[in-house]
Image 1 (tube, rainbow, N blue to C red):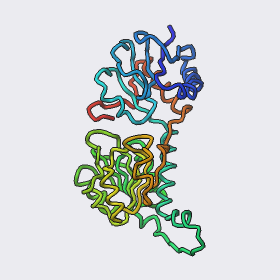
Image 2 (tube, one colour; image 1 turned 90 degrees about the vertical axis):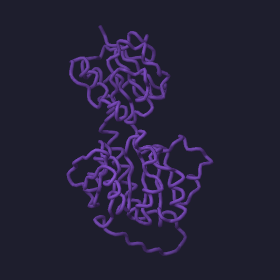
Image 3 (spheres, helix red, strand yellow; image 1 turned 180 degrees about the vertical axis):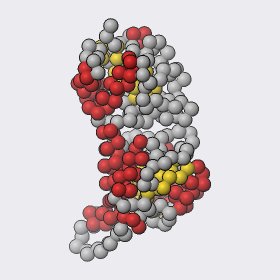
Image 4 (cartoon, one colour; image 1 turned 120 degrees about the vertical axis):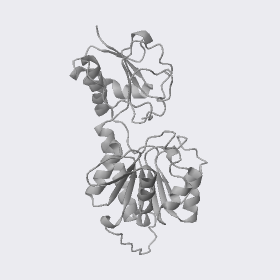
Length: 311
């Protein structure tokens, strides 16, 4: 009997994903699967899911073997008490490469102080000679798949990279720290800080006033992770005082960022519209299909969310 796979996401996502998902399912021998936007709950075998979906009560999905998230972030669904099925987050080579591209690009922008010239085409000869990469310490908060990949890429360019995580990790070429004491060390000499942590109760406002004070004067904040990782009022205050030199922010507590938010007009803030890394339908579809293949073969699912940790 063909599998029933519910695509629980928006119509525009369906238009982008239908063809690559069907191709990926065909590649694993499930070309006859019933992939659709509307399937009776009791008949659904797998849910391809966006947390913004209308599906919020998972109790009727009694046959469902797994919920396969389209995005890396699962904070919008992991706390749902009705979700008892296995939940897999998106870990995708395309998403990872996109994040590396964005992070390296903005790190280099700040390292070279490109804005000085791009924003000041006024006939004045402004000489700025940046330090070499080995003299520019970078700290990455979060050493999951994205943080690790970005850290390795920056280390490959010669930057001394410190990676911090709540539990100790070991990544070749990076100084890896953990715990509260490790966080103090990681921030104390960081000229550029990149936030790539998941959003959990433990990480909310991780970068607060006290931790911003630990950074060297003029340090730069780059946040492509999650908006609530930063205490917005504390960051604005640190920018106004000059202690923080600039903040490039791709994620926010409320999205789209309201037009009246002070970040928009602040001269030391760059806003990008949550574009640091977008899930690519073709590569993401292969990740989803692989988990379906595993489920049908009786093999363990990959990229499962640990509900106790929230990611």
